[in-house]
Image (tube, rainbow, N blue to C red; front, side, top):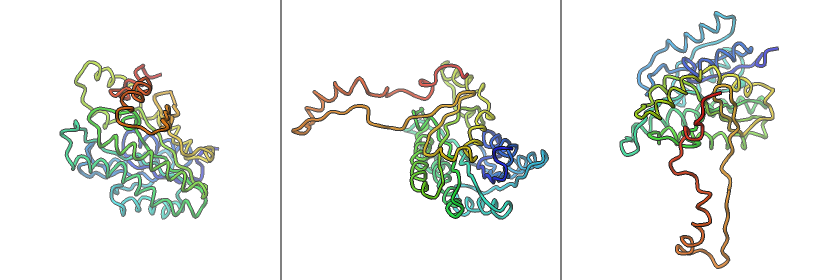
Length: 304
């Protein structure tokens, strides 16, 4: 039997790229799918119902069940309509995939409040809005799966992405809180950091040979590689998996650690600025994270 037979899954940003591949696989695994996509450009401008409808049409042409929804996840009423459409069309909602996103990359000193707010609204507020709308249904049925998309730009760091990095690390905090608060209701929440070539990634400038090499590596990682982990997390086979952070990089799947203390130093009489400089700093310095480290430094080898 298909892993998602009888399930209803809502996927945001499902008109193109990673979201589309997730929706297609969930449908092949038996789920009825709500295809949400605002249809905007990579930076969030414009509106086009075509991508969402095309994905829904492709699923139906293959014998699956799907409907299109073009609401903006940044709008609470729009986010609620995604869940309402699922229940109205298919009778229930079993999993949501918070994948929708935009990029407005700027070096920090040139980032405007508008660039900051737009990215936070779609990624972080959007994940909150859709999750909040699904929560009453999940609680009533005593089951449900939240699957949120984070990024190594937030988990590790990247240049020119303060807005995106903050939103994506915020999503980890959101997912963790949902997992803790909803565990008693049988509801789980997890994060995935995807490595895949997409139209958003294509907007990242490559100004050095090293950046160009990184982009070329990304081009080898297709969006369809992300979908199997999503389908698994949406299924009953993952009923004991919650409050985790995964990564997918071509044929590799990672489990990320969470921040935990790695060094401790105690001084019975208390610390002074001078004793911190003279005693604590030399002790802690060998364990400091590299202040210039980015995702590409951690994952510097070719995708497997």
